[in-house]
Amino acid sequence: MEGEGTVTSQIAVRARRRAFAAAVLTAVSALGFASIACAQEEVVLLVNGEPITSLDIQQRTKFMALSTHKTPTRQEAIDSLIDQILELREAKRYGIVPKDADVNSAFDNIASHMGVDAQKLSQILANGGASAATLKLQLSAQIAWTSLVRGRYKASLEIPDTDIEAELKLHQPGQNSEVGYEYIMRPIIMVVPHGSPDTAYEARKRDAEALRARFSNCTDGVAFAQGLPEVAVRDPVYKSSADLQQQLRDILDSTEVGHLTPPEQTDEGIQMFAVCSKKESKTDTPEARKLRDAIFEKKFGAKAKRYLADLRRQAMIEYK
Image (cartoon, rainbow, N blue to C red; front, side):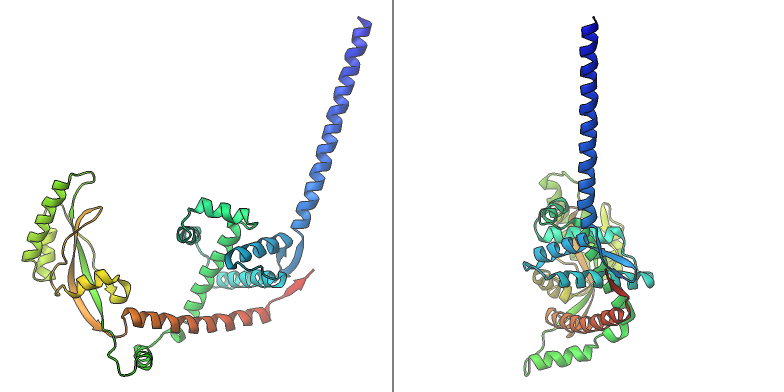
């Protein structure tokens, strides 16, 4: 019995020693990982008191490489982070703080353009050494900065129609400029419940054609449509030719004011548009819209660049 007790005691002691050794190894490992983490989180510089760490620079470098397919220099990554901090702080000073929903929507749009979902985009960024947080922070800065510059320089960023007309003549001398239209429309929907058979859609198409035949002006026609069963009349929609696909522009161009467009099947049922107003415009055509956007981007870019340069001159940037 005494021998058994001694053996049991020795086993217990060895077990305690193994447990102690494991605890020590765990602690050492934790300290090692902590040291690595600290190295990654080492503050490299302060921008108006806000830190930029080694990890920030590393992730921004990876992100820029992923998005441009060109590895930036360390200083280019740092400059990008400095600009981001200055843009967000300046926007916040004017009460502009992007909503999470807007940032997430922008993130989802990027994913959609890439043909993936948000989760897959996050995975792509992580696999490339960046992170979803890095992209979302940059999107937040872009949203805030764009809103700020547009708001502060709204008057000087406006482009008169006369400037567009002059540019169109300059680009197309001796040619007739394309004519566009500004529309006011009322969507009218013959409602068909989801899951209905094809015969239900065909019946509603006949109803739509009957309404279309007697529709001669928006005042009386809209009021009549609103009194019909299972018919939804939406609020007015304001659109220009430049906003529309060519197919829809052709349909609207061939529809007289006060009449309905041909019926088409949608998820809600059978839809038509009452064309209530159509005003001619030479400065709101697809061609003119493209030119206007190009001029705006040039003016906006110049204003934003000067603004950011002023913020940089005033900023306290301290390298560690």
